[in-house]
Image (cartoon, rainbow, N blue to C red; front, top):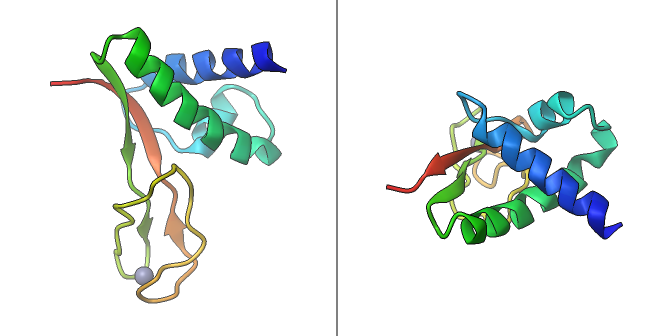
Length: 108
Ligand SMILES: [Zn+2]
């Protein structure tokens, strides 16, 4: 399903280019009319979309991630290697985690 995959990446880039505020994966799913079971697929596609956007725009555009944070104590998940929603806060063990949000920005 390589071509379907590429299309999803392109759609995600378009959505993140045209938004005023950063979007969660759930926002993207709603906008693209995907299934909520596709969450993992969308996170994965964002990772690949970030790489291809960087390449295609010759480093001019990038997908920026607003990191997830704990809604209870405010802990910020700054050093995630991959975009995802952590299940638990390492500081207070709360499971109320605000998911990461994404937007396309011009590099300055
Ligand atoms: Zn916490």
